Length: 290
Ligand code: C5P
Image 1: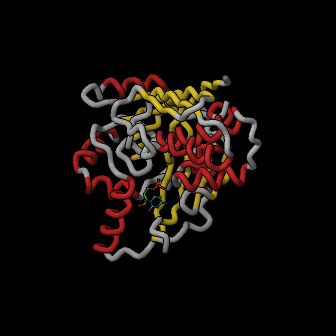
Image 2: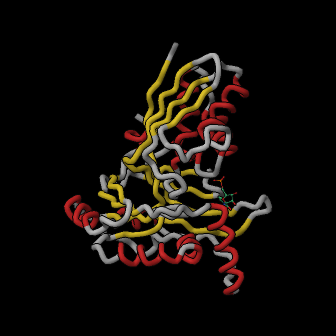
């Protein structure tokens, strides 16, 4: 029987603006996604019965797991044989690094290939979005501007290989809780809904990386910091490490710092011996979808 070994890469967000709340309960947003080298491995094999296993005991093995749900959707929609999935997990769970979404997209692409389904990219994107807001990005990967729920994607040029330090707190932040908290903070402060920034050249902001650019910020930071005050202390600490750009990724709780050199990045990591960290680099679309 056919089998495939695929890598499933994490993402960070160079910026994330939360706009208004929509009728369907989601928020419109504007973000720039970036694939990074940190990845999980998936072994996907044709089989007679569906099965899922992983080395990470914290993960659900049923359809609460996005990779399991992705496989189910493919079997249901295209009437193909089931698959067994073996997941080796390295991307922290609940960290805002898109691990579950990336795994789901990897399953969609692998099943499409395994069974030569030749699914149109439009249909694949719709299936991806039905699984989660971030899943469509992982079909494209690389560097991309996104709007809507995160599914209206425009590819951006690769930013080059930028050394990153990830600081990964023990406690995760729930995505739904972060969005709700942001609404609460904005209501309390009487802040009007953010509108999409007109005429901002994200391209020139990205060109200034990793020296940093003040327009590349994350609206969900304030929400996560108020839900988890120790995260703000960690963030303040990370900001003193000489990184050109330093922000929370997605809805947190992972903090990311971009450095001008691997030496500076590694020195910063050494001063975070008391916290879980990981090092990574930005990767291109070609590398992410190899
Ligand atoms: O789509 P996903 O399942 O990743 O979203 C998790 C939760 O995060 C949603 O149920 C919603 O509460 C919130 N969310 C949102 N707007 C988005 C994405 C997520 O409000 N664009």
